[in-house]
Length: 232
Ligand code: C5P
View 1: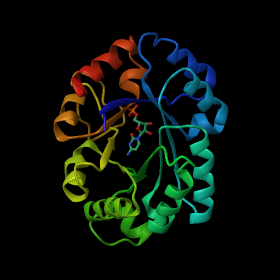
View 2: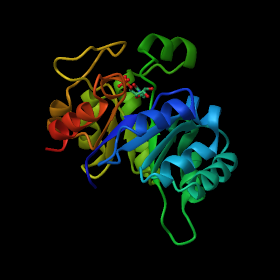
View 3: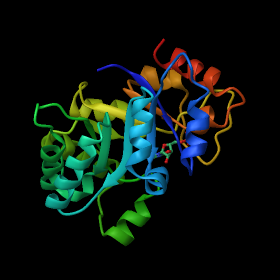
């Protein structure tokens, strides 16, 4: 499985997204499309970016009853995305149904990645709001293992957790890690960050990088720097 840098295209409109992607002429980066852009522009934006030759991680974090998730995943699969995701909290049955829905008639399918506990959920919120009393690290690893049991390809996690996920679920189980910053860059609202080189060392398979590239004076140079540090 090839390591890659995924650019988080957190733009609110098609125009802003395509204007950004137009800057990339000799390379076609793997891009992440999230809820904001997808809900604003619909499947057309996925088709347009795909047509331009980019790989797409569609980050919609599905979580519903297994039957609904299965049917929705079948729709996303037909959009020809390369990677998509769901909440592991939807249970193993939901994840298995998602995989079934995602698998095309010819047996191919996009990569399917689970979100464990969101990084916005801390121990206190998990205990008080969700009534989950176990330590959050244990919950994250348990959810990652459930995703593996269901047959998923990996999890979204902090680069700081990537090593432990590989120890628990195996080296082949993918870790897709946001929270990446250049050593000389602005951390913004991310608290626990790693450089692309550190993420490489710890064994992240894909890094998801937004503002260090999208807000850079020269996004193409920032993307290339990221690739050099992470992929080498
Ligand atoms: O701009 P920045 O590099 O912080 O963007 C990181 C991307 O990864 C954003 O799209 C953000 O929503 C996403 N993400 C994250 N932390 C998580 C899960 C997803 O930053 N735990």
